Amino acid sequence: MKAHQDGGILTADLDGHVSHHKDDEEQIAKYRELLQSIQEKEKRHRETDMEMEIKWVPVMLITKVLLPVKLLKAKEQTSKTGIG
Image 1 (tube, rainbow, N blue to C red):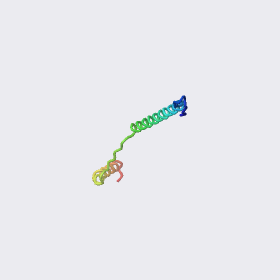
Image 2: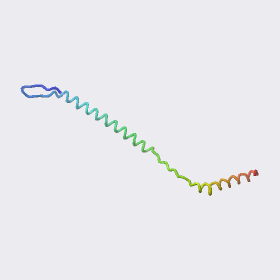
Image 3: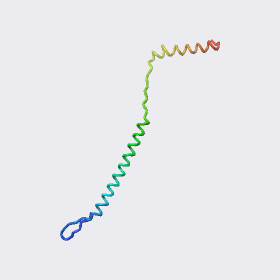
Image 4: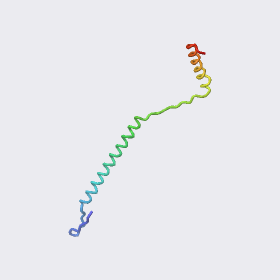
């Protein structure tokens, strides 16, 4: 901003001030666009995000329930084929 002495009154060159104001508005607009794009990416990520649940099977369940069932099925297969 340039200052001028005009008849004892100090006046300012507003051209410099206006250009700074315009630059500030452009920076704010760019910031808003960037912020909006980040928010849109986060929204898409939340929409496609999925949760996974893992359940642990106790060893006793495997040895007392699942293993005998597997052995039974294997025995049935061998009896059908006549091998064994």
